[in-house]
Length: 173
Image (cartoon, rainbow, N blue to C red):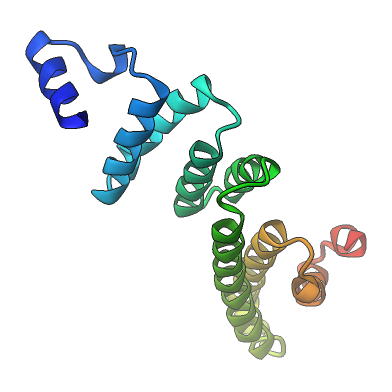
């Protein structure tokens, strides 16, 4: 059906943006583009779909997934929260993906943190050390955003902030 719609649109000279596709047709097209690993086109159609059905579980899940791939964890979290609020369908997938994003960002934070700690007594490496602590802070902040109930990021994040002179922010943790 999707392929046929594309042929018809192409033959009539209409663009996909001008087509009044139903929500169901949009989501079928989204899934095809995802299978083809064409996330940019899937994203465009998901934005159209979410306008038609803002509370749809699948549309919110896939938009969150897209933003996670793009590194926009705030948007990812917002769309996944909407998908989970419905209480059906994608909660296990979202939890599994959150675990992956948490683990990756936490581990990146720990790696940068440990590398920075090794440079603490080397005044010639202050710039590199601060850069590594800043990387660690970024990783820990994302980990906390993705899984706010997991407290493992707080202590190293606080320590890194203190070394960077951001005492007020560290104390808020």
